[in-house]
Length: 281
Ligand code: C2E
Ligand code: CA
Ligand code: CA
Ligand code: CA
Image 1 (cartoon, rainbow, N blue to C red):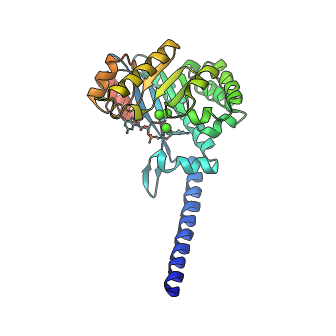
Image 2: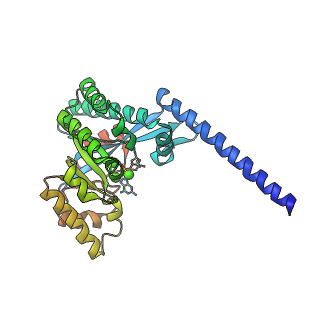
Image 3: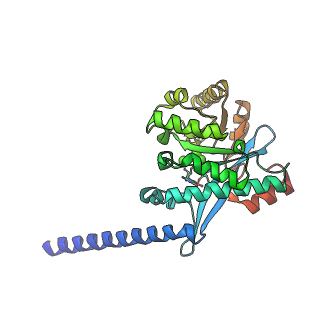
């Protein structure tokens, strides 16, 4: 039994060792990814209802890892957040998104998105020069501030309400808009709606899964739509995967929708082609 125990410990130890090496390796490669130009910008359409015209796009980052292929954010954003690399990634995405959409608007004024939204990670709001950085991205790319939406999750907002409110006010003075992402998944939604300046609510897709056929959930989503509209906010419903969901949401008064049914995140070239040949998605 003793020998077996020792063997188990060795296996355990060597697995930990492997994991550690693996992690250091991933971290090093992620660190280089930005400089080696391995990040990719994907854009997912946000559609205006009724009519399904593209209103805006959301920027979603991908990592074209030469060893493992195209990586989704779930596989590297957590590591990037732990190591602080997220600041660099978000900076790249911000700049790339502004540049891409500005060029697109110049090329096709009537068949391009009116806004682009960019995700900011929790640590971002604590970076003192965030506002300068956003202003710089706008000035350099020429994108109108009104065309930029910054998406923040509720967890970010809950950190320090006073600091957050002040920071967001600065950003809004530039003319950019603030969205609350994954709305409804946090704990104090009403509190920060009172204290924090926001322009857009993005209803989390967990409210949409199982929406059809669930009266209670429908009433909840209706109430959120109404609340948002009463406060003069734009409400985007995320995670629409079926025609039934879209049709139901349309009847509930939903004006902006995003989801695989309407368009997946895609490289800009693919999306441009789709929008110029097919008008609506
Ligand atoms: P998010 O901001 O809530 O983005 C929406 C996620 O839902 C995206 O996943 C999108 O591909 C996915 N999605 C869209 N429509 C549907 C649908 O109909 N069904 C389902 N099941 N999923 C749908 P993605 O691209 O894997 O991104 C995951 C998360 O990673 C994002 O969630 C965001 O929190 C984070 N993220 C992505 N890009 C960035 C970035 O540039 N910076 C930061 N800080 N975070 C990012
Ligand atoms: Ca988002
Ligand atoms: Ca979301
Ligand atoms: Ca999210």
